[in-house]
Length: 336
Image 1 (spheres, rainbow, N blue to C red):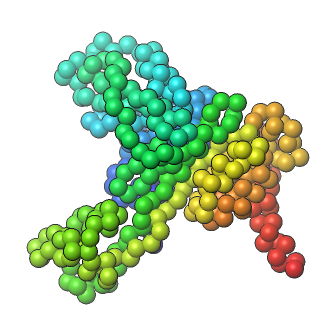
Image 2 (image 1 turned 45 degrees about the vertical axis):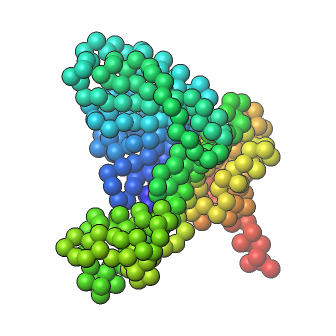
């Protein structure tokens, strides 16, 4: 089965946090957090349609200028979603530049910024290049509680964690994973091509089996006939991103609910457990707690990041503690 997105850290674990989620099919990507993005090429950044920002500490937002500048001459919008007050902060950032050369003949690049309070979108602002990025309000999209964004193929769930301020954690969940059996396609004398994307979309939307699917150069085929033979359907991919969270029970409970049975968990591991007083003082997770959360949530793969620079002289020690905690039950089972 092929995943909807290929996620990876933007930077090494000691540098600014962020995950780049590259869609396997379609020229598109999503970012979780917007710190230093110099490691991403202009081509990669121009694929970004949405950015979900945990909070606006500088290491999570410093890449805004580069992304914004690259997108200025593209015709499709950039959507940014962050914690309460985020739209206003984006507006102030934009107002720091001079836009006297923009007019009605400019490419009408559009930036939309929205606030999310941990349960719902609460405020929205839109900025158009042809209007010199003057702020305007627009109607918020309506999603179920706990969902920051939703499309046919996936949704972005989000919760607000305590970091002294709200810090959002995100989960991309694919609605359904639909793949094509190429061998069966040949048996049915059906050609490959973009029409299969429409068939997959119909499956994800739950359209009835008698829904006709158009096939180039062929008679249409019933969706049910494809589902029964040429399409393989399975639960969708889940990718979770957690950073900047105080190590206390309330945050842990929220993270566990968000990350339950995820395929991949990207989670901060800032301090060693032996330095837990530092974690408590700075409102960050320890490596041991990160691994323990991943184990209890039943995730398949864990990627730790956001390491404190105090461990640069022993760069593997945090990762090792995360995986020791993640596998602790396996070792107990082996000893038994």
